[in-house]
Length: 469
Image (cartoon, rainbow, N blue to C red; front, top):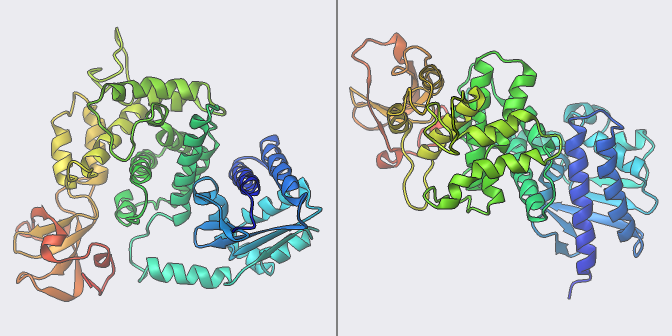
């Protein structure tokens, strides 16, 4: 029988949830801000209850979960994923908090965790950084140094220097825990807080590489990421990348990013199955209005997020929903998020249908150009994604097969390609990269293909020198 009571596990959950929230908010506000203090106070309260019956609280990090005593803390990665990821980034596998720990100590703990890993390593590690601040009640231990762990992760994700950069795992963790945090607030009938969306938007703007298609990063997203999280990350990534191309200010891009994180919150509010959305059910048409209602009563929610949630299905010609009367111009950000959402919905498969290829999706959406979608907006969106989006496998007129790496904003049918199969259909010993804009007109794309039909592993084909292995 376990030595850990259910009440203790509940208090550990509250401790983790509060620390996770404080760590998120600390990325938005300066040290000592009231919003951070609220989270630290909640954490101290939960910790105090735990320390009433023991001298110390010891938490282990096992892969992506927290262990307390001999019990795993149920679904801890969902509400404390950001905290877990930051601990892992700093090489921490075990946290021990002793009696006498104060909210100020917890504040130093949060402050150190959000520091740059390299900077902390130069100070001798996260434990030395804490001790230098006079904190003796918190002990942080690790089985592997952050440098070694980081090197191992990068070798796994980026086998060579010219492999496209995937979205950082921390960003996916933030999206996952942020969405679960929103869902948890709604289930408890509490006002939602926009802080998770703002932190995510900031990290997303930093993660996207200027000059590189966002679809390169999306193509490398891990398959185990939850479907509804993956869908939201795709929509927000496309929206933010588009905004960066328009040379908007950092604040404007981050506001758009937060809005594109929250735009479908009405689905959560209505309890619609996010893994298999039925767009024909009557409730579905109510989610923009429900989303706007939830955001209006939320904390630190910008007006733009409310507008985008309400308008993203209205369409340019007002033929969508919710229905409005009289003349109205849809907010351009709502139009952009609506277009990105439509594209992602088409290319993402469901239990009932297989996702379309990017070229098929663009062709389908082009039927609504000038109607659902503003003509200029649609043209610029296609210039960004390309007809054959990065990550798409194509066959050339001469029979060669390759993977689209980059698109051209003007010559949208002539991207840069990594050739992996020769004219005879045989795997090349070393891939060849060509830019179709520099090739003769006869060297052109015949069609997009399914890589599995050619026996190719899409993930391996990103690795120069190792196609399909």
